[in-house]
Length: 243
Ligand SMILES: Nc1ncnc2c1ncn2[C@@H]1O[C@H](COP(=O)(O)OP(=O)(O)O)[C@@H](O)[C@H]1O
Ligand SMILES: [Mg+2]
Image (cartoon, rainbow, N blue to C red; front, side):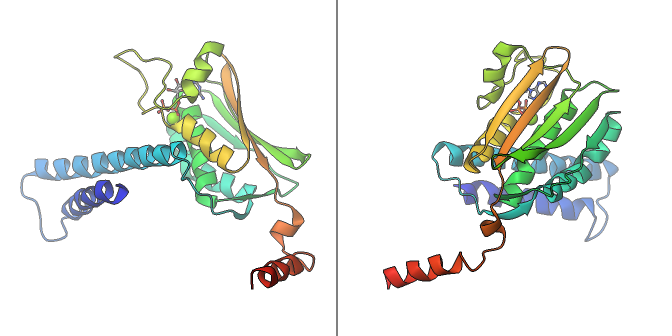
């Protein structure tokens, strides 16, 4: 299924990219260049929607797999910060990503963790008017979990809006002339990815005041980070048993 959807799109994106770059000569009328650019950016947009819908199908059929390895939380967050900083500047939003003196390491899938925080950051940006601020904080882990909050000073939500926001395709303002773009998949996917990491997502929000999305993730144990001597015998025992 995914192959059937992605292959034609890759042709659309790839060939429009070649045309945009005029790789085999100029396009003639300048309007063709504009069209090629539009095809390329629309194709990219469509591909990201298709990827989200396919991810949603995976979470709903419980075929979503997480390739867990030790991941330093700071690395994920600073990469996300680099990816959205430009967008924040354009939206006149101050972005602050707090430090992590504890150097927290979680067991997770780097790409999925990045997707979680990108989805949350893109909402914080989209739903915050100019002059606002977005703050990402890592709270020191208690009883094996770390808490990361992505907080904004944006439009906020009413309590009854929260379940709508968390539902697939759910958007609180569903009027035809909706002010904000999107498909309503960012938050439910973030929640599903967090739960696939044995974590939890919580929302604290107040209409007109802002929103904080709290991500609670299990911290990797020392044995998971550095499989030591007490880890290896378990492995050899298992292989001995299965031999
Ligand atoms: N930080 C936020 N501030 C205010 N509303 C939010 C925030 N994040 C999510 N929402 C609400 O939840 C809805 C669903 O979010 P999401 O699943 O990411 O979809 P999308 O961003 O495509 O609309 C949004 O349309 C919006 O109404
Ligand atoms: Mg979103």
